Length: 165
Image (cartoon, rainbow, N blue to C red; front, side, top):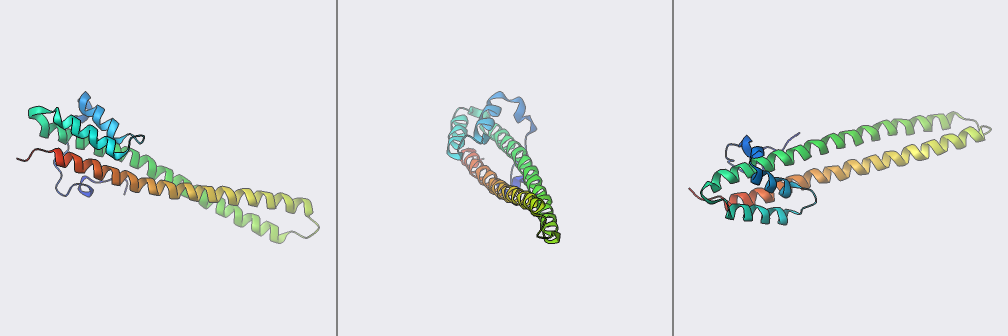
């Protein structure tokens, strides 16, 4: 999944409003809430403060906020997916290098001490870098889950602030 669909966080979401970017106040709330430096609680507080000041256009404004939250989170989500793919590819390439190092080491005679040491060192670094790439991919997978959870929490606040019809 390259993006989080609106239905993942809202069973029957409202029609998204692309005009959210043209509304400075909405944009400010969205950017603040989605900013990775801000915990979901701070984003929820910003949404509540915004909703309290929205007046008669509260519902439309909150739909814009939701639209922005979804768009900005999906932007981060897409970047994260690309990162995961890059680290997985790097780990795969390095795994092949380690296998090649192993094959070359197995083919060496005991007399090739200097070449053996060079291959052992290359294998060590290839294996270490492969392990690092796997750990980075795992971390980014956790980040994907966090992004979806954060979007869910922010969406809950938008829904809670939404005036009933």
